[in-house]
Amino acid sequence: MLLLLTIVCLSCEKKPVQPNENDGTETESINSSLQGVWLMKEHNEKALFFISFHPTSSTEGKYSLCVSTSIMSSGTYTISSNSVNLTNYIGYSCGNLTVNLSNGCLTVYGNVISYDTQDDEYFSEDFTLSNEEISFPVVGITYTYGCLSVIYGSSNQYLTLTSNYILRIYSQQDHGSHTIFNDYTYYYVYRNKNNQNPIVYTQGTDGYGEIDIYQLIDFTEIIP
Image (cartoon, rainbow, N blue to C red; front, side, top):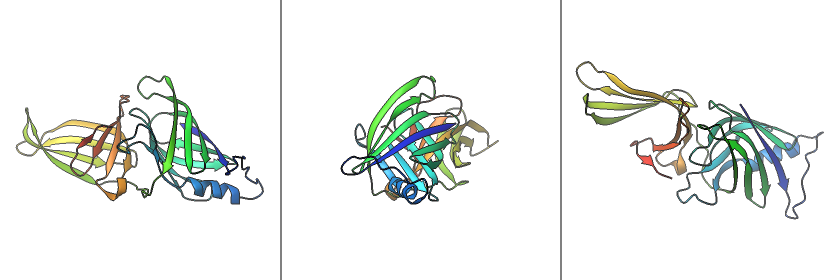
């Protein structure tokens, strides 16, 4: 499950910068220039669609993205020469993308695979660097919400981040037999947008590709 991003770094004169294969300085500079949370410029009034890079060494790092209501991804990346290989830890391949970085604008384009239909879709958008800090989920944390079920009556709903890429949502009757119901797992991408109420982008692990977005503190759904 590899995503290949070809990165071309351009100067103000828009001449390609070629990394020196005998010196890791240029590659490290490319990696450093990608660091941060980039917001999609168009069709993004609520600033929900993004791509982020977090270098962990001169040639490696972690990334996450959500660029539409059906395309999200999260995992690690490695830079080799002027290309970046992304390993997607969410359970499907997104396809191949190309990234151009020029004058503070990050352009991402290429064919991606729709999660639910497995059809190729062409994607092309520009991103600008935000002042948002990159955030990471706390694995094992559980959020609890009160709910009322027609069948089970007064209940609690639980959302647990079971790993860096999987969360579980289930409900449990808060009296009597404490029956568990509506028990599902989802792929997710975590984002603590501007250190406010953290949000998760979710896709069903059963192959349903539509992305649902929730605030974690009160479990409110956000409509893009």
